Length: 504
Ligand code: AMP
Image 1: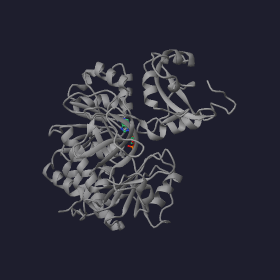
Image 2: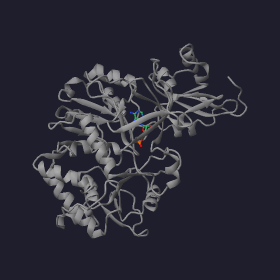
Image 3: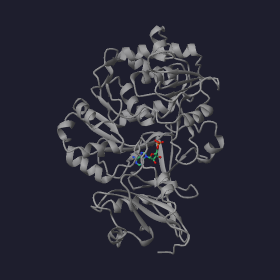
Image 4: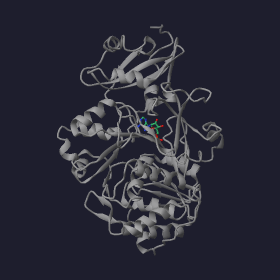
């Protein structure tokens, strides 16, 4: 049997031909027949350019239906899809080109011109005009042959966001993406009449795999918005049954006073992930819409690991239970499993777990236990029922005076202050404590003073966890998936405790 995930999709497309696959904001519709046909033509063009099984196709393209067809055509041709954030500069792209060594680089016509050909790759665009794949596609014959692949052959190389050091390519196989899509559809009870509202980018696993595969594998329609926009989401939500988003989608919608349950009448589930959903957002969303957001946890290397239940209690601040077929455990320093209630490293094993980092066997070996569990780099705690809560990234852990301080614990308490809209707690170099705890606060009105924070935390948190400095900022720096970039905050505030400062 062909292990190529494109074969599974092709079978679904063939039996759902006249159904809308992608419905664009301007009303244009691509049916499943349409999508299959454009994919088949693009597959011919890829073959003409020389893309053979195992070759990488690096795509830095906008969010268009053609980009979806390009992804599918790459799989069909047996290629390895390498999506890149459209915001990367030419210098950054040069690094990815050198690392991935693609056969073909597809770039946005609007993006800076990156020298093509030097590394042996062809360069094309997705727009209209010369050198365009879309133009070549219109003249190409269809090729419906799906290249033979094993389930553990590579389907995609997803570069991690690289907040420390160089970005690494996570090698995802056909089995990884298929097994996860099948598990999610079951877990979230995907229905034949579901309509997905898709406002996520396509260069990340969230938009490309998690959201899109649920819909494509069911032959159900997707409302395909080019980006997140409150007005567009409000317009299209009434026609949707499922929305997947990062927490910022939910906070932005809540900021719009006109947004309420009128817009959510047909929605059966709101799903959130890629960054922590604040319990306050969970509560405000329930109060405004009547829906309890379903939060789940995943990453580029493993797609989705855990999810709150579709039926059953969705707990704010928890990312739920391991998906079927996925083993999730919390371990101590020597890799020993910890009992419920203790904080440790989150480790994951299952068909969803990637094959390793591209051309980095040493790095790969470091991050896997001998029994195959991947050390995610996240810290968490599990309750007696197996519900997981994330405490933060291991690298964000603060060690102050020899004590471990988990930023999320401190942030959750600070966020209870009415004067605080949100906060990020970081550790920066401190001459006496090694690291000093710093609270970076976005005030909801007037600036929040260190005294106010100290008074509030007194009796609520142990002294060593309390911030030694409080700074007010207008907004927290976030990446395009809504994750707070703590590395940037650590850099910006690295000099807060000069070497002459004394212990407080
Ligand atoms: P990425 O590889 O860009 O998808 O980033 C993955 C990381 O995002 C994970 O390792 C977590 O640190 C974080 N993350 C994803 N989902 C959640 C969630 N629901 N709550 C908290 N952090 C999350």
